[in-house]
Length: 338
Image (cartoon, rainbow, N blue to C red; front, side, top):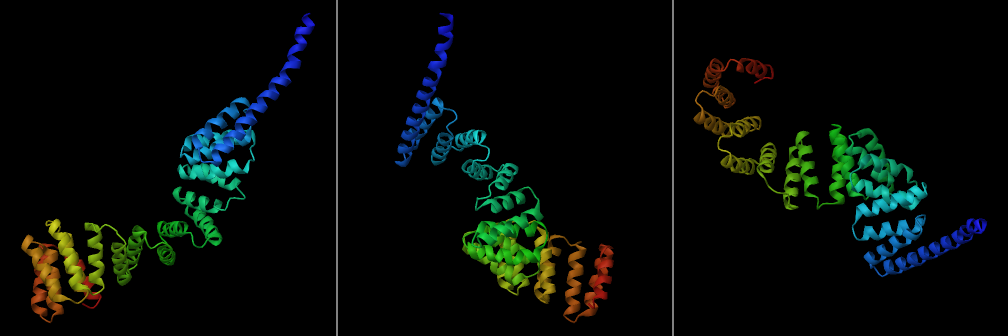
């Protein structure tokens, strides 16, 4: 009798296992039907029952992951794909989905790891490049992004990321044409256009900077004080004096104690040979502080350029007495042929 009882489980177990597999397949097929009709919650519940009966059902784990993605339940989706991958470490579907999910979750190290495993992923180089950029590995980012853009030259986001990579590498001249391409691909990205303007400005290409700032504003970029200040300076340098002054004075009205703007305006207008206008801002500075040696020195330079050299020289000498550090500036000006 003892021998009979010991043998019975050997007969029963295969039968129970077969029933579990059948139940798993029943709920799996039911889940597929529900998923096809876009009833994702019910589908997910069926897939959960399927793996409850057979935890090795890889297809059920994968389909449950996809159903959860449709419901934007990304944590649950990641868990399902991880379960599938544990059962089949080379599963292409699981690797592909996890690559994108880790990237979207900003888990860049994992995104890179999985993208390198995903040989058939069209976006693998894109994800590697953009993740490398986030990790500040700029040379690797450039290599991957260039490869991605060979596959899809119309990818605006990848193009912009490549431009930003060059910018952060301080390779500004390389960044310029890539920024131009990014903006061309997606002219609605006003922040990209504004950054392009800042790039032009830093390269002393003020005309293009002014045009880019104006385009950014037309595309909806918020015209903050910083924006108006940058556009104002670019306008002055481009010869749009009335526009530039108006913008900068608007900022100044909001920051009445900001002497830097007045001083910059005086300097830029002097460089642009607008000596009378420069004198106006020197005068404003001296009205704020009669002992402002730099403003007095700037005014003296203007008078010298206007032909009143004696008066200008006297003002510069007086300014140096007020601020001896200006003497070195005078020597530099003299060397440059002032």
